[in-house]
Image (cartoon, rainbow, N blue to C red; front, side, top):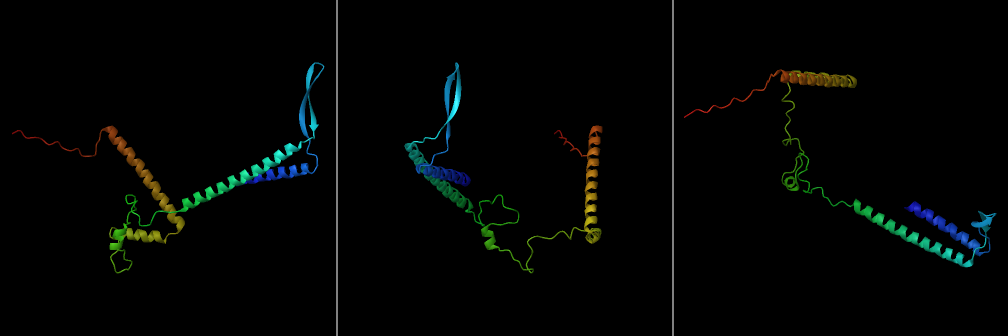
Length: 202
């Protein structure tokens, strides 16, 4: 928008300077006009130069240039004010950090303002932690030994073991799918069927 305005202003300035030179008596750039003549029964078109410019045409073009220049300035200023106003309005934030408008989509572990004010989170180590660490309780001695071994490995070796584990899981998944499909085709159902309840006749 601003680049277009600058180009139009440049064209208007060139037109104004050209009009001023014409007013001083300098001849304008010759323009071409088409003239038709009939030569030997055939119409031919000729181009000839016309360097005569009327004074009233010069005044009219000069006035049109200034009107166009003023119109461009007004449009550019209006567009600038509009863009600036919309940008500032978009940057305004009307949401508060403690807003309950997104209560349904709240992330796990967050609380509302009332619960936070009544039960603030304690950061001291003497208080009971917010979550219970069951990670160590579920591990066996072999698991701890394996974790210690993995922690001593370099990065490349650890990545290789992770890739091998992923490939193994993929192969086992394919094997399980194959066995389930085979059992279904053979009519072998491993899931126990519920036994129907027999009604005793009175």
